Structure formats: structure tokens, C-alpha cells
Amino acid sequence: MDFVEEPFTSDERERLQPHFTNLEGPVFALVDLPEVVKGALFARYSRSPKSLRRLFLDEFASEGTEGSRASVAVGTERAEQLYERVFFEYGDDSVAQLGGVHLAVEQVSQPLAKILEWGRLGAYLEQSTRYIPYDDRPGGRWRFTVPEEVETLPDLAVRYWATLDDAFETYARWLGPLQEHLRAQTPRDPSDSDVVYRLTIRAKACDALRGLLPAATRSNVGIFATAQSYEQLLLRMRASGLTEVREYADLMLVELRKVIPAFLTRVDLPDRGGAWTAYLRKTRAAVATTAEEALHAVVPEDRHEVTLTDFDPDGEVKVVAAALYAVSELPDDQLLDIARKMTADERARVLRAYVGERANRRHRPGRAFERTSYRFDVRCDYGSFRDLQRHRMLTIEWQALSPDHGYEVPSEVEAVGAADDWRGVMERSANLFRAMREAGLQVAAQYGVSMAYRIRFVMEMNAREAMHLIELRTTPQGHPVYRRVAQAMHRLIERQAGHHAIAEAMSFVDHSGGEAGRLEAERRSEARRRP
Image 1 (cartoon, rainbow, N blue to C red):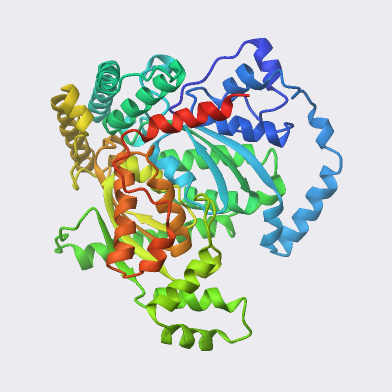
Image 2 (cartoon, rainbow, N blue to C red):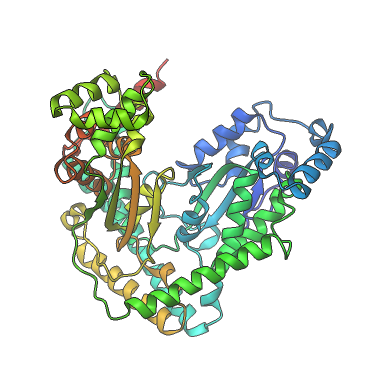
């Protein structure tokens, strides 16, 4: 496999051995550690360029984490036998929700990271392209994946390496000048500490330049999930058309079986997991073939960045009826009829009472807001899609990444004089994509596409999830592109759907430009850190 192995001294290996299922590979589980330590390790992942094992050594190994695997072995054999009978023989899948594992999956490409984070019932932490500059070269190379599909074609592999090396070199070359430009544009306030100011400037520079990085850019992903979620994830991964995804599925299965073997007995059995994986692979291929036959002559129509494609005109009426349900003795259909006969002001009064006085965006109304939903078609850069894709409780589907939808040049890149270099990287990325497609690498061609290129995806969410997403993603410290997407969603709910009271309930939506938001956020974070 294509990954950089991290060296450890004999003393470091001795300290790591009791707590990690292996010390060599890019996939490993955490064992014999307090839950608070495992959670804290994953929390550090998003803002550190280090591997999880290195983070443990540098920041946690002296925190009383020593232990022996023998300490958790009591009753293991009996438990394995019980789970084997209930889970495998009786087919009671719900018991697989009782076993959870912290798993680190390192040095993965962006397409693989999105597959890992697709499941709803799991917790995920990923290295952030906002807080971690990608200007280092661990193992003497830039941090990108070279898929096996490319390595088998020597001439294409040379071009792939050259194109991606150039993208990373351009990113690294402009990271310093852009930070200097931003410091000149945003002088440091005397009341700001050096840490607050430095992190703000660096984050903004990383935000602006991340579009240069290809989808092959590597990341570390921390996962905490139940055995049931892991089983479903592995089945999907084993059906993937990407070699990297299938190889990581095999590595994950090996490590997970060191911790929860009884829960994963079905994954690679031919008549169980094998049959399920074959089903997923065959249906995907069948739909692709059918779509090619039905849509091959259809040209995509032009659309705005965000389009509200489906909503219920009676959605607000239904939310009012749902809000009244739990505090009345009337049947659902009768309440719906009553809500329909109310005036707009009367319905608004019910919803204002239901929403109440929200002190912050975490104060969200109850499940009545799940009574109506919105479906948005979005076309934005791949980097921002990565952030929006993490809202897993809603329904999200995305199309293949390609250069076909174009890209935009961030204003900061234009201002610092890097626009020509930016366009050069985009052109070479598009040419590599076409070369890979011509070589028959239909799925793997996305690895070389720069994250500035747009991707089309659909998001469907109920009003309660819309409130969470839109309020969170419009905070002033957010990335400008996904802020713009979320702001458009809010306007469409109010104006196109006509759900004025629901839009009004989203009182923490921020429609400002947000230029100073990140600095304010860092100031608040520093204030919380003070004793």
C-alpha cells in the first residue's frame, strides 16, 4: 500500500504497545485507554498534523494511561460466545449496537475520507485543511495518495506525480506571502495575543489556498462507532470501485477483529457479507448503465449555486399541527385541519411559543420541525462540499468530482498576485483528469482534481436539521463559500417556500460578510482558556 510508515524508538514502541492494535500500519484501534483519553486524542486530530500515535506520545503518554490488556480480558470468552450465538445464529442485529471501537484511519485520500464519514451512526474527526498547513513533506514527499490504478501505468504515473507535486509546491510557495498580505490588510489589535492573531491569519490563508490541493490530499480520520455501523461501512467499502477504499476495508477489518471479533463474523463470509457486497456492486453498475442509456444526449441546464428543488407548500401548517400534538388530546388529522384554518398570524404565534426564547443556536425546538423538509441542489467547490458533507443526519448524495463545473479564484489569491499560478494549477489538474479518463481510469480520475473545482450534490433535510446546518455554517468564522451556500438556503426557505415563520425561528443565521468573524472566534476561544 502507498503510505509513509512512521518510525518509533524502542522506548516509544514499549509505551505504545499496550494501547494500539499495531504500530506499523495506517489503520489501528485504541485499547486499554480511558474513554476521556480516547476522546481527547481524536479531538486533537483536527488541528494537528501529527499521527494519532505521535500525539499520544507527545501529549498523553504521561497522563496515567498505563495498563494491561489482561485487565479487560475477564469474561471475554463468555461474552464472545454469547454474541456469536445472538448475533450470528439468531440474526439479532441490534446487539451489534452494544460494542463500540475508537479506530484511527490515517493517510487517506479525500474520496476515501468522504466514504468513511458517510454513515449517520458514527462520530468522526478529520484533519482540517483550515488549521493545518500542507507545506510539509513527511517521508520526503508531499501528502497525497498515489492510487494503485495509476501506478500500473508508468507514463501516466510520472505525469500524475509531476502534476500533484506542482500543486503542492504552488500551495507552499504562496502560503507565506499570502499571510504577509493578510497581516497588512488586518493589523494586529494591541489587545490580541500573538497566538490569536497568528492562528487567525494562518487559518484565513489556508482557507484561501486549499483549493490548490488535489482530492488525493491525505488526511487522518478518527472514528468512534458501533459494531453495526462498522459492518455496514465495511460492506460499502468492499463494493467500491477504488482500490484504495477496498484495501483500507481489509486493514480495518483486521484491526477491528482484534477488539470486537464476534460482531464482524459476517463481513467476509461468501453467503453473508460477500453476497451483500455483490448486491451493492451490481446495483451500482446497473444504475450507471441505465443512466448512460437514458441520459447520454441530455445537456445539463444552468443553475444557481443553490437551488431549492422540492418543498411542501403546506409545510409550515404541518409543523404547527405537530407542535400542538403533544399538548392536546386531538388526533393528528384533526389538528392538521385546525392548523390549516388558522390565520398566518395565529400559526406564527403557535410557532413562536414552540420555539421560545433561544439564548444561543444550540437551543433548538423539538421534533415538530421534522414535519416538513427541503431538498437543495448545490454546486460549490469540493473543499466546501467536504465541510457540508459532514452533516450526516440529513440525506446527501453527490456526483463524481470532475473539472466540468469550473472553479473560482478567491479574492485573497487575486489580491496577492497568485491568480496566474492558481489558474495554471487548475489547467494542469483538468488535463490530468482527462488523461486518466482516456486511460480508462473512470473512477480514479477524481484523485487529481483540485479541490477548487465545483462538485454537484443534493442535500435533503427537515426544518430542524436545516436550522442546525444553516445557523452553524453561517457563523462569521466559517469558510466564505459554505457560508454563502447556507445563507442562500435560508433565503430560499423564506422566499421560495414561503415558510416565513420557520425562517424567522432560525434567529442565529448570520447574513453578514463575516470578514472579522474568525478573529472574534479566536478571541473567544482564548478567553475560555484563561483561568
